[in-house]
Image (cartoon, rainbow, N blue to C red):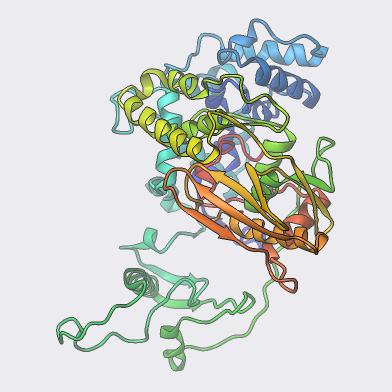
Length: 527
């Protein structure tokens, strides 16, 4: 709408906005040993550093893992003159601030006293400029208010609790503009839930389709439950919620109600309640074209045409996450859920890379528990029990304290060379079973099963005299699942798209309400 010249006020997800990410990156460096937030900080006004120097600092931090910000007094050798000058500016900006300070005090000090970041946001009177300043105010005020867990929150506790809030969607109140914005001359863009209790002269409602509003045309005059003839219905609660949402949406308008039905999506279908009310509406056929997104290209560190299999599955979820994990080799742990840290430590204790001596003792679990420290002192007993349970099941599968990964297999899938490293490979005659082990069940958007079946299809096609299957083991539940190759004529569209993207070197960010809050790169992505 803004691009078309219609002023629209829309905050959206505050924590996905660029200006909010800048502030989160500033807070991240106080608790993150990897220095991943420097990718974003190095581009802020007055804090710029050449990209080569940023990579040098991050690689040095990754190898040594010093205390956060302690490296400002003893930087790595080899920095350029501009890099050294930038490092001195960082030292001046962060001087005297620590992770135990209030995030409100830290951000206000940096914005108002130490940097020129805020100056660039104060110019401009357009609706986009005003929206940016509103979003900044929403976030800064959010930093000031205690989160209910402690009377005084620190930078560290804020980052950890922010991730938890985002994972359960407890940040929606920040998407509502403050009352001071009511006088702005702009179209209010809001969710249906956010419009409850409000009325407007004209309302435009997009996406009137069955995907968003699954409901019948009219409710029964007498509910089946009262007639003692109720039958089980799948997704009953979701359908009821969809019905309520549609009612709220349609009842916000005083005079004008404009509904938009998208017909371009696969199997698009209008919600039945609107179809049955077609005689009340005036249909208008139109065509809308959205500008094509600019896709970021990978830098020199990306080897187009080949990747690791875990990297391929990561790319299927988010290309930018793949870029951070496998091209930049960033491994920030700040703010991650402690259970996720324990799961990673368990897998490192159970398996070492192929060709590495597994007899060398590892104590990753103990080191991780020690690093959690006082912040999770009440949970350490439970986390230790969780780790012991995973280790017990894992060692039962491998029949060893620690095992080496299986020899990598090279598979070419849709032109992409994939290096498949399984946890174990067993065989019986001409039949091979590739074993993959994970700590917990797959998430909502995990592509592991489909990616494995797709990979097996190409592996079987390249070795027609052999038979292949995969076995997926889950340590936390003890579940096991056998996977077979996809049919020769079936090509997984998600896997094919990922292969094409990797071959082209596309690394665009792919925001997702389920995956982003639990991603280790959430605080600095995209950068």
